[in-house]
Length: 163
Image (cartoon, rainbow, N blue to C red; front, side):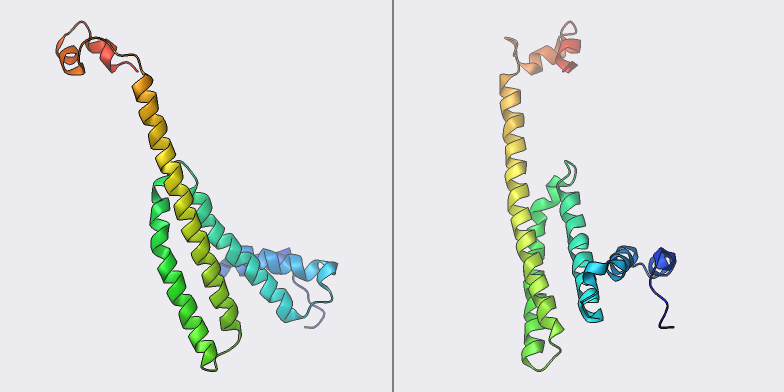
């Protein structure tokens, strides 16, 4: 048992446990000689940090797309949830709970700041896009007649629909 090491053959187990990215991180760290001086606990902690960062970044990556941009301001609703979770972790540590909960609390605070910052950025981007659309519409050439009059005139109906 002691001579067995993690390899890519173990990925099926990690996949079955829905821990594929975590498994890849653990295997990479276990087989990298630069981490040989680290304890097992330090290696697992480092892999957990990488996995947690990857999962929160997935949400931020999805929000940065043109279709996901509209959901950015709603990220601000997650900030109090993360703050509440951090408060619970720190309270448990103060009452004699395990020390790793403090790390989890700091992780929640970090995610709170990330969500708040992403919410502000996406709101600014949404406003910028709306302003650009308004400016683009105001610079579009206009005919002398109103659009209501042009829609009822069969000779101009195609011209009004064309961009």
